[in-house]
Length: 488
Image (tube, rainbow, N blue to C red; front, side, top):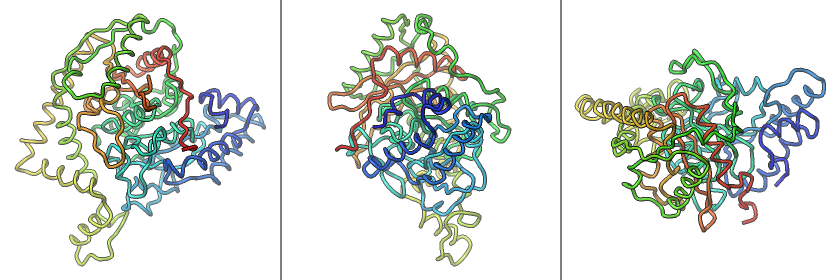
């Protein structure tokens, strides 16, 4: 492991800008690490080594010449393969988009280009972000760097594995139902989903539009806050993006008294679900540390938590059905050579290029949106969703943040299944539009990382970073401990 990766993003950027190292050296170190571990981890679908080194060299020239340079000048980053980069392929890990070339940059990519970030490659994911294990990718299965026989989580498992294994210092992902925070918990890194509307989704392949958000993976909360300071802010092209100016989300992160002024809520419903004893032991230890550092721990209750799995399944699949309807094989993407009529062309193009999980969700979503089922299923689910949001908002009147395990079960081996309530406390944040962040806190006896999750009221993202960073400081977890996946 190159020593450069024992530094945070800000330190890497400082070393590059001061001349202590160069962007080219940092980028080469990334690809060296990728060469070591990628054959076993399989985090990337595509690597852009030649182009990345050219961009790195341009950053170095800019710095040497004294020209104005960006906030992340020369710093490498991984990009999930459902985010558009102009002129590059974007497959969303599906055969349907195998030959699709992005005609424009996503909003977050525009912002990263402006500040000089270097794109290392496109990370693997579940096909069209449908899955929780990165096993539904049409191209390869990504492994958990801490145990390559186990899943890294999903759908953003490639980005999580790339950061966890030390291939890149941070990466972008998308979160629809815990798709960033669950794999972050499984791989021992920080995963963040913003408040709904804080970061533009323009240029991102949609899954379920009322859930989707772009977020990040990093080794520390501070690195995540740095990245969010760059990619957040208003964008008229995303109709749900709030007209909020970009802000400094690193503000007051190092205040030693942060926890002394906070009320942390523990869901009473946590005891209603099957959970791994090692996770609960680590969680209870984390609660004790928060209390010892001055936080007030209170029990809160949101009875509607029990509806979360059903709500997510019904509403998400309905929105999947509507969004994937544009994939007809006519305007872009895979077109079947076997169609004999227009309807046959539609049918065969989708049947031949989409995976089982995608088809299953389209079919169920179409069912719940049918005329006979709409009011009984979809409309009723939206009413109960409002009930859940009201429950959670009432809980936030009693506490600043809701604190829970990141997941209720440890990652399973390939082919295994996680219970649907495993991510229940993560999915609630997507249903309500609340921000959430997963922070690693401990290791299990067999060496697998365990994470905890903070959820705050909408647009409390700055305070969320402050609380998560304060916990990170007292958790005792070594953020720069890397898995030895290259040596196994």
